[in-house]
Amino acid sequence: MSDGKDVLEEIRAGVVAGDMKGVAVLTEGALQSGLDAKTIMDGGLVAAMEVVGDKFEKKDYFVAEVLISARAMEASLVLLRPLLEASKVEPLGRVAVGTVAGDLHDIGKNIVAMVLIGAGMEVTNLGVDVSPEAFVQAVADGADVIGMSSLLTTTRAMMSTVVSLLQERGLRDSVKVVIGGAAVTDRFAAEIGADGYARDANEAVKMVKGLLEG
Ligand code: B1M
Image 1: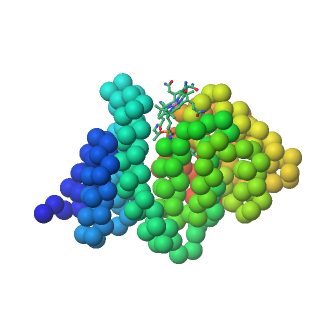
Image 2 (image 1 turned 90 degrees about the horizontal axis):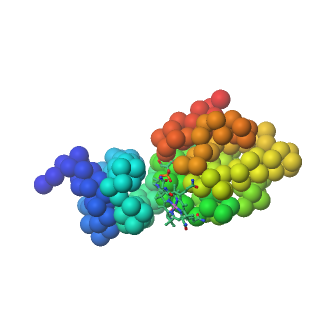
C-alpha cells in the first residue's frame, strides 16, 4: 500500500512516460485514498510537466513525446477539474486566459489556467487563436485580469494589439494584463505596457494575486 507521496511520484512518472491510462487510474486511486485535487495537480501534474520541459530543452524529448505527456496530463485533469472548480467558495478574482491569435500552443496556457483555478480564481479559458476582440470582450464581461500566452515570435505582437485595443475602448484601467509563454520576456511585457510577465504557472499565480491585492 503506497502513501500519498508515492502516488504523486507514480503520477509524475506516468505523465513523463506518457502513460495516459495509468495516470487516469492512479489519479482515481489517489482521490479515493483522500488526496485532494490541488495536491495531485501541483505535486503530480505540474511537477511532471516541468520534467518534460527540461527533457525537451536537453533534447531528450521531441515534440511527439511532449504531446504524449500532455495527453496523459489531460487524462488526469479531466478528473481533477470539476473538483477544483467545486472547491472555490468566493473567487479571489476573475481571470480570462487565452493563447493569442495565430498561435495554437495550449499546453502551458492550460496548466496556468488550472493552477489559477487551484489558487481560488474564477477562470475563463478562452482557448487558442484568440482574437484581440475576444480578449477585449472578456474584459467588458468583467474579467479583472487577462492572461495572454504566446509561444511564437510571429504571434507575440498580438499582445500589443490587445493592449492598444483595450486603451482605445477605454478599458485599459479596469483590467490587469499578464503575459507568458516561450516567445515573451519581462522586457517585452514592459515594452507593450502589460502589467507583468510570468515565467511559469506558479509565478503567474503569485503575480495575479499580487495585482488583485495591489
Ligand atoms: Co511548436 N513551436 N510549433 N508546436 N512547440 C515551439 C514554441 C518552438 C519554440 C519549437 C522550436 O522550434 N524549438 C517553435 C517557435 C519558434 C519561434 O517562434 N521562435 C515552434 C514552432 C515553430 C511551431 C510551428 C510553426 C511548427 C510548424 O508547423 N512548422 C507550429 C505553429 C502552430 C501554430 O501555433 N500556429 C507549431 C506546432 C506545435 C504543435 C501543434 C506540434 C505542438 C503544440 C501542441 C499544443 O500546444 N496543443 C507544439 C509544441 C508542443 C511545441 C514545443 C515543443 C513545446 C511547447 C510546450 O507545450 N511546452 C515548443 C518548444 C518550446 O517551447 N521550447 C514549440 C510545455 C509547456 C508546459 O511550457 O508552453 O512554455 P510553455 O508554458 C509554460 C510557461 O511558458 C508559462 O507557464 C507555462 C507552464 O509553466 N506560460 C504562461 C505559458 N503561457 C502563459 C500565460 C500566462 C502566464 C504564464 O499568462 C498569465
